[in-house]
Length: 169
Image (cartoon, rainbow, N blue to C red; front, side):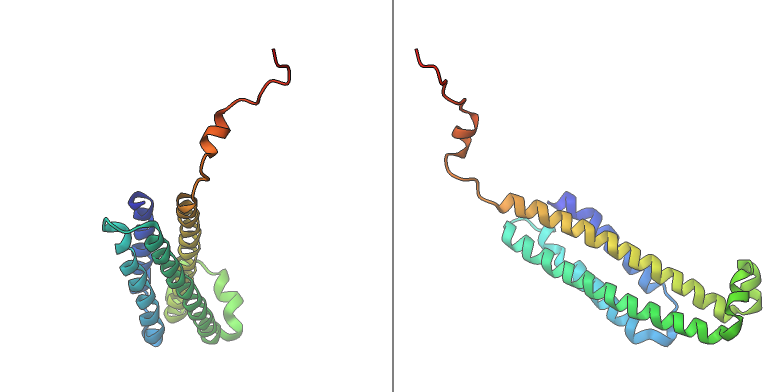
């Protein structure tokens, strides 16, 4: 199971780098809340690193990780909406004309709007990583569920025995 969780941990750490690197001076409380969810998800992964945890404990930890990721996606969506509103407010009616300019010209003409737009796209990237992470967590949950499903007693002998011949000698 640990091998399946390593990419999950990598994606959580990637998200943490993205979120911690965002210049969110006006949105520090939202960023702190997003970091809290990421730290919570990372703490839950310890169940998979340490031996001795059964499938039920792992599934419970996986549910908690999925909850953290779900709340993180919600927080990022709210944050992205706030950043989009700030961007529209910075540019007003000149938004369409500004977006037609090359990135270098945008950076010179209105550095604040340019940085806000970059922030919006970074949040979009973080939300995409969250979606990929949520999908991977669902896949791992399915594997754990199949592993926890009991095999009916005697099923193996009936599955491999051929059917009796309709013609008896």
